[in-house]
Image (cartoon, rainbow, N blue to C red; front, side, top):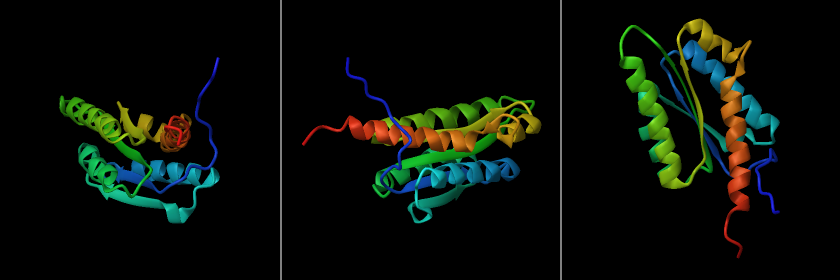
Length: 157
């Protein structure tokens, strides 16, 4: 049986790190984790572009523009939505997740989902380089693996 899967070899192409400014105490750590993971896997700093948006809800529209530009091979989307006392959390978190997934499907472009959806700031910090690792780094590693997998699935010429 043939087996096809991605690996962590250096991906080809520019990578956009798309990050929200809201909850920057957390998101800045996610950015650092994503950038570090990409550099450790051979991506050149010159092939990275950091793009900031106001909040997680704005990630999908900007990701769509990035994908449509044809300038990037992948997007690492980073943000942090912390649950409050209203349904606002559900709309923002769900909108970001669904919108980013749609961008990936519409453009055939890997979009790493590094948007934290937590119940507290403590949980968010734990997932942004604390005791639960760095989900920004995890999202970056996912797009490296996905880029290399998709390359293997390209039609033979």
